[in-house]
Image 1 (tube, rainbow, N blue to C red):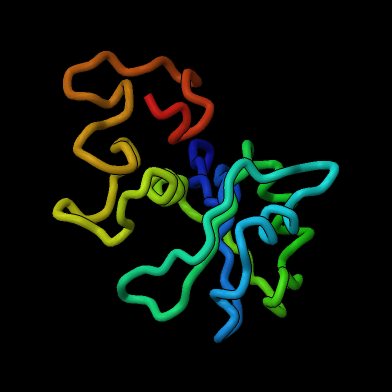
Image 2: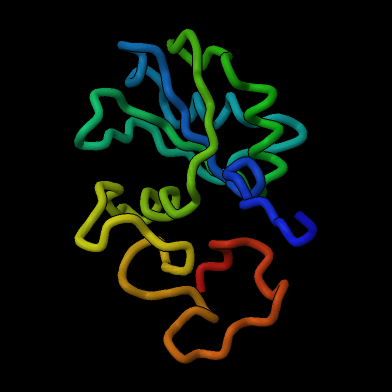
Length: 152
């Protein structure tokens, strides 16, 4: 166990929260209500997306993106289970940053020809992140502070 390094979890690096509402309340909140709900003196979201629905799901979700992981952690701890606008309750979970990048850029989350994305692949398309491209020289350890940002 001397050299065991646990895999990082979404809680360790995600900047984005996925919001799930009770049945029938998934389409009653606005971007402004969600933005205001998550704005405090300590943190504020960078962006909000509401009403996103996957083709295979019956419910819609909202997403809240923060500038860093610490703000996302605080928001989840303080705001999980609260009421937003006409929604009586909200369930908050961390989500993969590649999902956020795809939503933000208007790209479908519904799979694709290549299936799941490898860690070294960009959020969509066939390109890898810098340091992972073909015979490119790898980046030195610690050069990237986050798996997906910056998106070069």
